[in-house]
Image: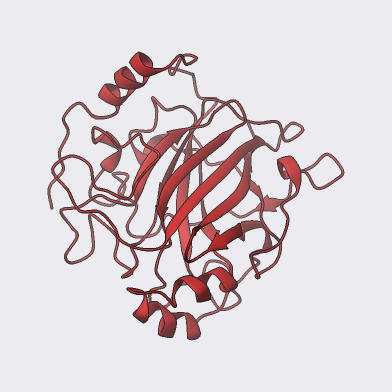
Length: 270
């Protein structure tokens, strides 16, 4: 297992500054301790639910979701490799490895949009924060860790929240491996400049994918093992989502033919 640092995040910041006008990236963090996560998902397992705008519940508050484990394959330096120092990791399309890795993860196209809002206020968008997102490939493997892909870092990327508090990643529908419901990991950092190691994160959680979309995606080529794995697990038996998954369940639209779009509103007490 090797890590390659050709300038890392600092080089990415220089490239971003040269290509677009942005507000300063060296925004000071309010604190580095974990804070409660809040989110608003689809609210049903069919994937056809309508998310509440801005993450609001109707009474000016946001629905709280639990902080979750980053799991054994974070790639943030807390358990082995640290992809956050890799040049090119700040990106929207995370399907292909960066650096010396060249593999591209195959699978049904999936666009993931997360909207970061402030639960300590009135669910207003949080601008200039950073979200690191990662998940397994369609075979259930995690780049940097799993046999056969330890020299790859695909399906991992960092984005800065825009003026609407949003980040969008282009990826593939993750597979279902034994013992876990299909999910996507993410960590929140107070700024893009601070998204270089796990010690700087301020929140960690996971996004759950609805069963209807999983069933459709797994009926396509390459997901055969996911079909049987999904049959043996449920949201209520999953060791992460069994204490309640409504606020972590993403809204998913689209199809296996055209690709899916997954959305979730996530709030932190900022």
